[in-house]
Length: 329
Image (cartoon, rainbow, N blue to C red; front, side):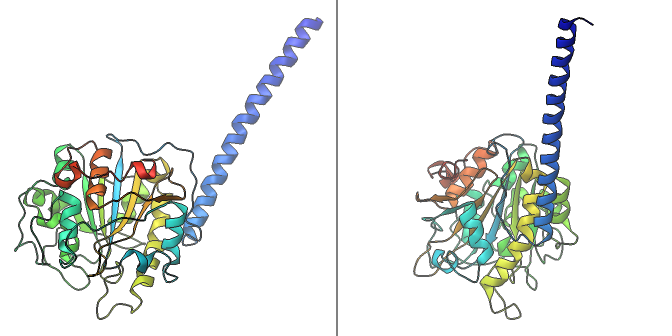
């Protein structure tokens, strides 16, 4: 073999070995990342911060938005509260809105908040009556998603069945807004489902399969959404925090979140009668240590969801500041 042929052979060997090591290194790094994420999830989410090399969830057919609705606590009752350590780590590690108002009169109870965030109007509601008293005919994000050819889900913990129209036990129907809309009623019978628990059920299965819908509205039961009931733990905030710690690591380890498709918004219905300044935490793979200071409301959350899903803006969402840009989304 001539010297030139030997040199060419050596160069080809070096290039091949470099390519092999790069591919092997990437494979090893990916495997380690998967193992560490699985371990964190299995340990109950000891650390909520997960860094993924993905772009922000992009608007369009593949985008997914999940709202987790909590109850009856103002901003100062949650942010900085030592009884909610996990939630505060989420707020610090991902993003929190410091000037988020419930957007409706403080003397009105919960139902108005759930209707506002899903339709852009309270419909004049200022009570907590069930769907028989408030059969709503206006448009809403559930109907919008269905018409667009995609699916939604209402995951209701402690619900007695699909589209349960009456409260029972720790299931409060006023916390599942899809049940109030007449044009969503047919899909409600299929898609407003009992949540299940960490071991089995609709939410667990959809997370694991990477089959979360375009729009998901998650309603923990009265013991877990910080609302409380006579037979619930006295520490409402702590019980809600532990529920989130059980579910959020599972959601963030799921295929939808890890692929960069999913944004999770944890928000509250109302604060106190003295003021409706409420906490809101935004979780996405590209949101890191964000403190969002613009004035935001449930109309901002609805606008962001509709923008992500490329749906027409409803009601107050048309004029609201979108939740997305303050969090880099």
